[in-house]
Image (tube, rainbow, N blue to C red; front, side, top):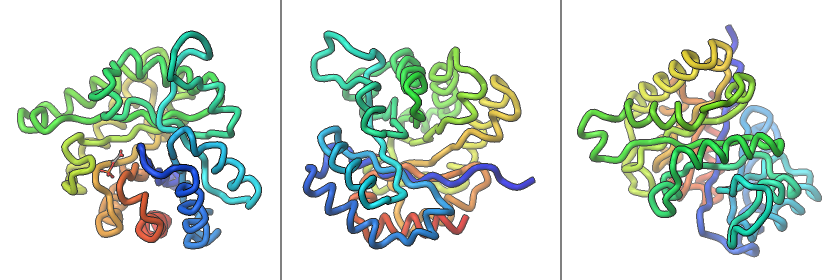
Length: 260
Ligand code: PEP
């Protein structure tokens, strides 16, 4: 059976790059990544909120094939939530994919599984695709609790969704100890956890959703490690932090992913 899942490489720029720097990075990336590569791999860019309008305009005017992404949103559409950003505002900016439940949001800003679930629903309600992040701490890994933690987050985050929604979304497996540390799970470990996530999705939402949901690996992905990760049958792409800030390295990651 042909693989229905187009690889997805997502660049999470976190709180880096003001809108001038973001525009330069986008333009350099557009120059480095040939159009035929973008016919084989989807690429989303997730800059800070203040850069979104600038990137949206440039992507539209220059007819680039990058997908605009956001790093976070609130689950309500409007109201007294000082400092928060509505999914409606993101959709108006042509944002296509929104990261939710990133471990930095969970750990530093107290986001719970319930909040992540509400965000996933809000992102879908406004026509965008969630990239829902899950992952274990080093202590949980060492205690042999990786699957329990990760699958618990998956089940809680997907609560109440329709199977068609789950089939269309993205789950990013990001071991917390590997994010920004230069350490990464072996490709075999990544495959094993991603396969368990897919099996859990299939068990709750049916074989079709299990076969269609895209599962990314994230955690210190570099040009030198992405090929082995992408060769794994249940790894459909990568969520890339640090290495996505360097257009040369990110373009290499994209080109390698396009070959899988
Ligand atoms: C991330 O931001 O989700 C991430 C995986 O970062 P890094 O690639 O720097 O580890």
